Each structure stands twice: as structure tokens, then as C-alpha cells.
Image (cartoon, rainbow over all chains, first blue to last red; front, side, top):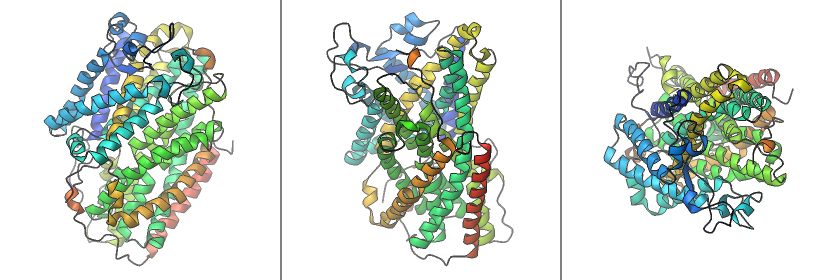
Length: 531
Length: 62
């Protein structure tokens, strides 16, 4: 029974990335809610805006305003104070987020000296790429480039910064390996993205509040849409999941003649949820540790390749702006790490919103975050199944393939394999929905002053903190991704299994199932309510 | 060999384990349990697909 050590239900609450993503994101979320009582302790969160070297007279884009504290725009009780922070908000964010993450690192017993040094460098490199990525030439669209005195822009929106962060990270990870090794203690894409995903729950809960400020009908529409995504995502994921795993298993066993355990770990890694599924399945079927490591490395590298290819493919080839939520849901089922999926969803969100705005000459604008949410929703459901599937496989291996007298698999394994950050994601979402439908009176005009205070707290978390953690994820993902691994001889066969399974099976099936459950879902048009 | 590198939040993976035995060779015969696992999974998927498309209001059946 050494395989299943005695663990309490609360084991790991202070020592795992999953739980620390919850504590940090939910902690800032609760601090943000103090705005309801007139105390704004989150308005310092920094955010970039588009800039140019020589802004036109009366136009936008001064470098001095390239970073600002979100409280400057949204605070109800301390707008004046936060207005004065400007670029200093970058330092405030570094100190406060750095302190929060260091507390988590300390509880997880990481090397604090290396973590603080690594985080400091990663943070400021991230800020630098965020700044460069918001040069109007990169981030402006055809619709708004003239405000910055430009006649041409790359139309990348905020997505340009993500790509830039990934490129910088990949350069460090592949050409400056000593430096990458130093940064590795703080290059934790899974931790950063899990924290960002919890704050995405804040985003989902906040959407109806945001749209209610435009019109009560829009707010209701947003609440209904996010619930529809929740239900459709669950159904699509269950179906996809039960097709992916056996399909990849058969490909591995029948075409590539791999042993059972290796095929099982590959099946989970390619079809379910990448690294954590590979590790969970490796443990469940008692595969040699090298199998989980190889699959995990492949998952990370292929996820980055998917991240580069799929958002552009879905935006410009198919389904385009006709079915943005089919694209988002398919992304969630096809990209195999939380980090790469949420990042790809965010990229897709930026690309799609920019494209629809350009296509309609500004007549249609979609609210930010819903397409990302559709990608994350399917991924979150998949994450929840890791524990269940690892449990099923453990049963099959223990009771069928490697039957040993008297061995039992404890049911608590399901809980221990459950991705805990999902709890934080749903908690924040439903908490804000309860506020919206409760004291917020579903966006009724008389409740708007109250909802404005909720908004003052929610925006820095769902916008500033979420985007910053996405940026940290991209940078860290690049830093830990070593393309040389693909060349290593031992990976040769597995690279081909992964390639065939991913592009000939997983992605097409994900697109079909995404289509079956999400085709025709539309996003609310907010063009008449925003500048 | 490779330096220690944590690949997930579990903290259980180390690069030393890459001192690998060949895990890609020695495939066992396909067994009936595998057929049961694969076919069973596909059947449950089809049942879930039909039920899901009937129940989920955003599916193409609606």
C-alpha cells in the first residue's frame, strides 16, 4: 500500500501550487470587496496602455502614461491617490504581489533567495515586454491607430504582448540556459496560470455587473451566456474526454506498438490535461518515472506549438468570427496544459475581438474575456476529471493487469487528484453572481451605486492581476521550454505518437464536439456603449 | 544527467529519473481488458453525446 500513503483531506493545503493559487487569488478578491465599505486596497494594480514616442497633438499615447494604477479609473473612494501613482504602480505591484508569492513559496519550502531573485528578474522582464507590446504600432487596430498618429498598425491588440513575452522566454530558455536555470525557481507557469484562472472566475462573475452599467438587459444576457458556457462546456468535455483517451491509447498501442503503461500515460497526457494528468496516471498505473517526465516534457513543448498555431488558425481560417465560442471551446479541449490553454484562449480573445471590430469598422465590439472563458471552461471541466480517470485507471491496473492479493484503492484518491484551483475559480464566480442577483438586484438602476463599488474592487483583480499573471505565465512557459528535448533520440517515437494523435485525432475531434455544443452561440455587442 | 527540474505542481518529478530504461519497447499482447476499457469508454461517450445534445440548450439539436 506504499503507493497510496495516508493523507488527510486537508493535506497539501499549505504546500501545493494548486492551493496557493486559491489563497492568493481569493485573498486579493476578498480584499477587493472592501470597496463595498469604501476601503480601496487594490487600486494600485498596474495596467499598461498603448503609447507612441511622439503622440500627436491632442492625441493619445504619452510614454509617461504607459502604465497607470487601475484605481485611477475605477476607484470610488481613492481615485485621487491612485491617479498620482502612474508608473509607480509597477513598483507597488512588484512589492505586493512579490510579497504574496514569496509567502506561498516559503510555505512550499522553495529556495527563497533564488525565488525572490528569479521573480524580480521575471517580473521586470515581463513589465518590459508588456510595455513594448503596447506600443501602438503593435497593439493598435485600424479602428483606433489614428489617435496615435499612425497610418499602419499590426492589429495585435493585447495579444502582441503575450507573443512577445513567450518569445523572450523561449530565447532565454533555449539560448541562455544558465540564466534560465537561475530563473527556474520562480518560472512557474502552472502556478501563475492557476492563479490567473481563479481571477478569471472574478471576471465571469463581474461580466454581468459590467454590462449592467451599459444596460440592464446586457447584464442579464451576460449572466445567461456564461451559464450556457458552463453547461455546454461540461457536456462537451465529458464526451471529448471519453473519446480522446481510448483513441490515443489505441493509436499508441496498435500503430506505435508501445507498452501498456507508456500508452496509458501518453493517453492521459495527450488527451486530458497534460502534465498533471501524465503524473497522476503515471502514479495510478505505476509507470516508471521516466515515462511521466518524457510525456510532461512533450506536453509542454507541444502546448507551446499549439499556442502559436491555433489562435491564428481559429481566427483567420476557421471558424473565424462566425463562431468564436466554438473556437474557444475547441481550444480548451485541444491544448493540453492549463497555462498554454488559458494563454491561447486569451490570445484568441484578443484576435477575435480585434478582427470583428476591424471587419465591421467598429460597429460590433465584443466584451473582453468571454472567449477566454469558453476556452478555460472546457479545460476546467477536463481538469476535474483527472482525479476520476486516474482513479478508474488505478482500479483497472490494480484489479486486472497487476492483480495483487488484498490491495485496495482508497476513494480519497479522487479528492487528492482533484485540481483545487478550480474551487477558487467557481467560488469567485458564484460569489459575484450572488452579489449581482442579491444586493445588486440584477442590475436594477437603484442598485447601480452599490454595483459601482463592487466594480471598483473587481476590475483591478479581473483585469490588472489576471493580465499580469497571464504575462508571467507566458514568460515562464518560454523559460522552461527547451526545444532541444525534441531532438533527443529517446523522444523520437513519442514525438510522432504525439504529433499523429494531436493533429489527426485530438484537434479534429475537439473541433467537432465544440461545434456540436457551441455552434450559434453569440456574444453581446457592446459597441454602442463604449468609445 | 539532466538537472533537477520540476515539471508540475506535484513536486514529485526529478531529472535523475531520466537515467532511463527503455520504456518504449516490450509491448505486451493486446488483452481483452484493454478492449473492454476502450470500447466501454467509447460507448459511454456516445451515450453522453446523445443525452448531452438533448439536454444542453446550446447544442445544434436546439
